Length: 271
Image (cartoon, rainbow, N blue to C red):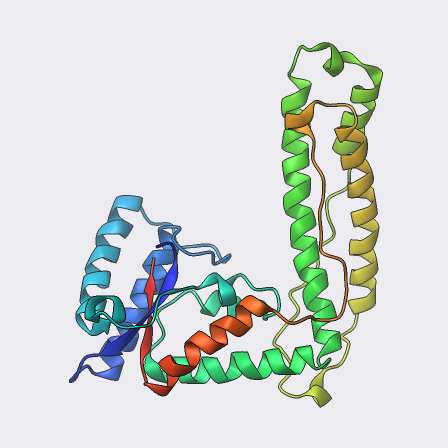
């Protein structure tokens, strides 16, 4: 099933504190086991220990819930990535999605997600979204450059004729000579209202630094790829900067979610 949300009713006589406590432990251990796409460093814990603790927490959590899959309900599951890996949302909100959500938590988050999506597709929060895009792009560049450097190192070890040609040696040098990607701060908390959306000091400089590094990285990758066979070729592909467009997958998720929220159900993290 992957990492999904499954609608679930909370069994009678379940205390909110008990449920919330188990939810936190369950999410924490799911992350420690690598079952979610959160990007914050997980606690260092042995796999076997984490798995035993997760199995215990999962059994205790499911004992408090009646999953729609158990009851033959009509609601299918839905991928958590629709929020947790969706770059339309602030990083903190993506991280927070990788968990079970109690009915009260789900009501709050559902309203927040919908309001944010309606606002940004209406053209609001442009300064914040620019910072968000710069931050996401910088992370993409960092990941791509690490892969390009590792690929160039692996290619240099080959004894094929192409690996001895001057063009390849020059391209490999370009990759090795790349400066590290710029350091860009996280975009910060999203504005509470459109009137609060303002540029922050250094925002324009960060955008320009990332744009300059993008040009260098694209050039190095292009030159390198011209000199190596298919398995070693690398191309940096980023979505072009543009106005926020409608997200059909997200809108479908909102349609799926509406009856779950109305029924005061939870969303169980099936990880």
